[in-house]
Image (cartoon, rainbow, N blue to C red; front, top):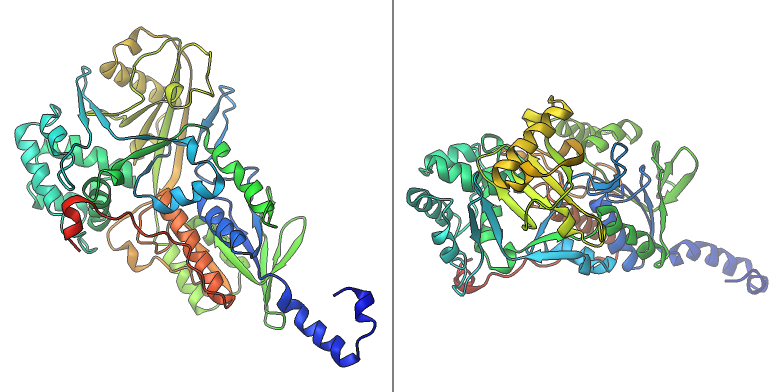
Length: 490
């Protein structure tokens, strides 16, 4: 109501207006953290009409899924190669919101390459799920007959259901199910170490089973692999326009220093080095170690002390990305799983991101080593020499090509370690503080440390905010439905 109109009101009416004015304002939310968890929470809330302010300490969005100009090469590189699968329905929904769905390239086949160059291709066929990949699997020369029998026996254990979490790790499960060395080294480890970023002896059987059932058995569409065709930071830059067009604000290079809750105003005050902000609710969308660092600046209570104790039980698992620029093309493949080697995946970035390198000669290759604990202490040149040597075993042209430049990126804190029984201490979106909510791939999403898990956590936090605001809303998307014979199972 305008001041001129207010002038003719009685004192009682003015008091009523003053009382109602805060109720007429949109419910305000500060989201701390501009990774996928924070972006998904902020975008969902802004779309639903909430007043959103996103605070990110870096100069760019995306968190661990971001890109930057590497100082040693002058090239814009992703901090690590990120992929998604067809069953990542909430991540796909976020891409739809941001208008970047067309920037994802989808592939229906996986190529396994052995030293020497022999290739085996896994792809769907006309058969119904869960048998859609069986013809290609039976033709695959990378696996012996005994390997195939063992893999088939192991896969069958996940057809009906995903095992409950237990103390057993996946290495023990593999031994108990009679898996051959070839099956373990050429199938289970390449697939699951890449998906979960952990070694089998530290890996939850529950989440290993979830990856196999929901990605490889559920339906052909569930296992499709999506690869961004543009640098990651470009993929998420559009989130700024998305939020601002819906009345939101994005503050980069803005790290919160303290949080204060007022029982009187029922609001949070979040202090940054340059400004203080108030809001009706806060979403803390941070990695577990990031939240741990902020805990001293949040109100202390027994629940917060327990959360701090639980956070101390999480651990990290590293990923190493090796970026190589050659003077010529070394392979016609766009991506491949490399067997019997330290390097696990090859992504031909010159082909995957053609617009970025249009007209430039040569070949840009990114190699990925997940759960790369052995590389953390290795020197840069050691890693590059190892990568070149192994790459030439798969692609002989690499031995003839000249290496123009190289970069090694060690993400020591790439993901949390998805060890057995970790779900016992993963918190929900509801935090120990009033109207404060948690998001991050490490919270209780039912998914492991993936981009999909991060987005799910953001949507769950947004749903918790909506309940606190008295306007319950649902943002999570339903899982991809099973097809074929899998529809007959629960």
